[in-house]
Length: 557
Image (cartoon, rainbow, N blue to C red; front, side, top):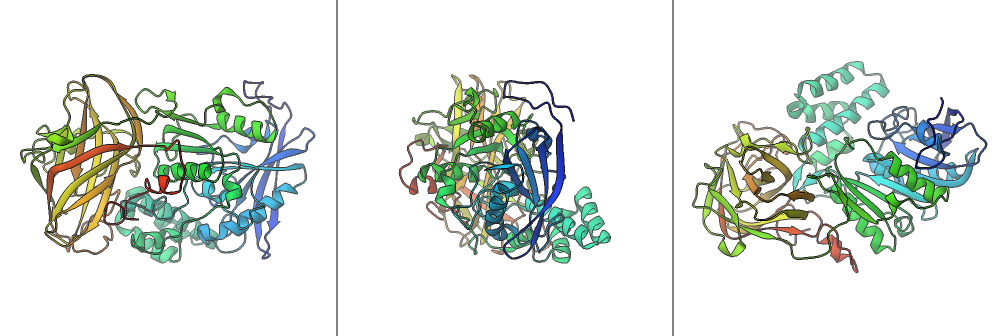
């Protein structure tokens, strides 16, 4: 393979790249299969290690350049099948297996033929977390680039506001289940799962498929675990958190909270992480980050000068202008209150966003499980990203609150949080929120951020509810308007709440109840909490920004 000509990110090796498969033996005797790409030119080379469950030949090329591209720039690149996946031995046990196997893999990579003993790690999602786990604080990478991942299996991987990620959780779990079928030679099971995903029927039959084909799988366990259940939270060694780290997140990625948490934990441990958040979803990175990532590894493993692209500790891409900029300095952020004469759920133009002191009125919102409000786009959608939702806002079961035209441009940066008093006539309910921008003639209603809270309350009890929305950075122009939309469902992003206090099993069923919500707007507020605390001094500073508890109560864990 002939490498492309030299570019701005350093020497491009003109030699061919070779690859080979090799096995590593873990401390318990289990063999893990790896594919190794190496430059033909004389070494030794630093190693870039990715450990993943999807097949080493794929090598996460859905988001990254092929390993041969990195190898052509002077690295040995190792992509390893984790235990129980691909051609590796053992049984797949999910994240619980990765601390021991990860430490063994780091030691092995340092001793590879052609290695100079230095190891960097990269990867997103599952392979983002594998590089963060080690049961030996001395067996850690020299630098790492975790993307789209998190440490808390509850709020970083499975739930938002006490509600399970239904469509995403099932889809990912069935992908792993299909791989298990393939590994066991179960072609009929593989085809049943594939057919279910292609037709969309997995939204109703997915749990049954997991029960048949991967009953002990991590995804099924997550979907059945209550919000207040026994959720693991992984703890990297402090020595690892202090290593050079490139953290990558996206405004429409469900793991963004985990990346922000990692940034804070690294800083608290004494590290100096580099953070980049783009206008990306989980698998669409708008052209990739490989040049930036290559520059990061060249600087830390090949001792090349720090390029300007890595000079800023944190840069954020504005979702509106697509300009990269530093986080805003701490300052007072706008706060809005909600007001309505009672028609906000039937007339999308009647409800208002205004100053909190002027909030007033109430709205009755009725959730009918026969026709649940759909969830669209955002960070939990099967169609993630910004989207038009004007048709959803015109439904009679969606309450809309819209600001006056902005007198001047407004930069929205932070974690939107709604505080509102709610009373329901059933033991459980959901409140799903969406934040959108309307253009000057209201022809476009562009959704920017979504969030939800699942609540279990005594019927008729009025209490304050907090709804945390997905963090965002977006610029609004003068004349545009901001809108907050509220509904009792976001199907299939989260399961439809049955209203009887049980954890919902998926779509609407004959036992689901109509739920009436009374929204008391007096004292309500929509505010932007800080995205990053640039002066972290104690763990509490970032823990306050984690997901709200299962009942959406202020201060719940």
